[in-house]
Image (tube, rainbow, N blue to C red; front, top):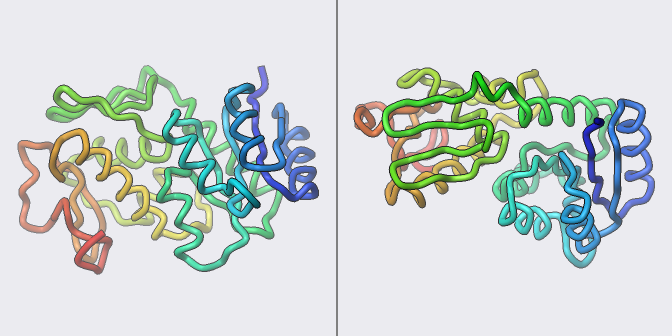
Length: 246
């Protein structure tokens, strides 16, 4: 059965282009012209992935993304016409898995859709990871801590899984970007900082304190289990590479 993609955009031409290329690539496509209609369509159609415009009148893409993240972990690719770094990353802060800047290549959109769907539908049997008191389960996209379970987006899962597979290893942003996408897209490496912040926020809420993911200043990030998280080179409350706070 083909994967179902929901395109939410108030520009009819953009929706038409997305539909044409996605359908030609074997996807089932439904669409919505605004945020409210998009939320209703997402709840009714239960798509496998959503392509979501950031700037729409009324209920914009940020509000839609925020609502969808409260309801589940459906993969979201954000479309944005804004070019400033802060604007590009704002959707990621709300839990979007990826973003594409307008004007965009329809072929790149299809490629990114395939990557995110592949990430969301990986082999469950090979994706149960346990380190210390933390475990990851791809079948549910969940991280389990003592007495707590947190829901992760597909991108958050892949980043956390990459870190957990090699505890103590320091990963650069570029390496984590590759782990998240599985392909060398020209995305801001700083996008990793947004995903790391989201992961830390969820982990801190579940654990009651900041731990597990440590910043190694000037280099990148690493994972340490609760038993070994106090190394001298990392800080769980530190900032992105080259700064003092994330």
